[in-house]
Amino acid sequence: MDHPENDTRYTGLSVNSGVAQPPSVNPYLKRHKRKPLPAPSELVEGIVKGDVTTLARAVTLVESLQPAHQAVAQEVIEKCLPHSGNSRRIGITGVPGAGKSTSIDVFGMHVLEHGGKLAVLAIDPSSERTKGSILGDKTRMEKLSQQADAFIRPSPSAGSLGGVARKTRETIVLCEAAGYDTIFVETVGVGQSEIAVHSMVDFFLLIQLAGTGDELQGIKRGIMEMADGIAINKADGDNIDRARLAQAQFRNALHLFPPTASGWMPEVLCYSGYYALGIDELWDMIDRYFAFVKENGYFERRRREQSRYWMFETINEQLRNHFYSNPEIEAMLKVGERRVLNNEISSFIAARDVIDYYFKTKF
Ligand code: GDP
Image (cartoon, rainbow, N blue to C red; front, side, top):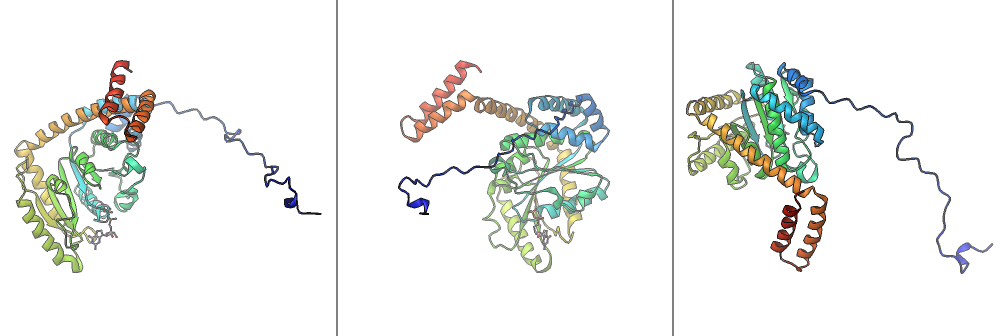
């Protein structure tokens, strides 16, 4: 028999008999009844008692995007506020590899050994665009993650950086109400996430490395200006001399900066997170800072300023969400965007048209 491809009517197309596809929903799956949402007062009661499971549950509601969860979360936050505020909020930043997790593990154990209760939160700026994570998961803090008095929570993942930061700020309130007297907020970023963390902490620690030869070039001036303390990590072994040199360079550089609003002169210290060297000195600096700003009233002033900042941040975020999540606006934006890219209309006209429509329609 001739080969089928030699037939002039052969097109190469044929339909094979296939295998029936399974349904995309498992027909045997029993529908689970959703657990009813806990009453806010129940959650608050558990949190104030220091119950970790309840705290974790409430934080999950804070992080949720569902309106019903948000409603409960907001009520819980409101009721926890009178129990909050009584903690030291410490921001910690540094480039990946600077030794943040190693250090937080050691700093955290230091806090616990002195009778404290510690919450470690994080703001991961990479979650905004890629839903990825620079900070990784918190099991990196090996010792701390096994301690009953340490509550470790990774960065909220969904939404804009502003949204993520707001959720972390709300989580601080819940942790404080649950009796955590030291709060670490870790971040890594290129400026924006440091601003967010700086706006919710009392003390901002910058972890730096020595030995790259361009210590001062590689770091954004803005981040250095925010720091209340600079800690040069990995001051161990052959690296000690280089760490000391970097310390001197940072000290000189800080002298050129304008005085800080707190009146505190930021200090530069060397330490080793890995070998737990210089930790007492570092903590002594932080103690002195808190004594200083509580004495001169800056502590209270900064917290009040931060509350005001978050009021406006929350308004901005919600207005932005309301605008961008509207399907009609979304469709208009797509058209406007294309016309601007094709040089058919100016960006200002395109923006005005959408904004006018938004305000006139009063969604
Ligand atoms: P992160 O990305 O900032 O969280 O950094 P890690 O804590 O994961 O540390 C990055 C690497 O530096 C790891 O291999 C650590 O073991 C190492 N490291 C951290 N602290 C020190 C230190 O004090 N001395 C030395 N020699 N290595 C350290």
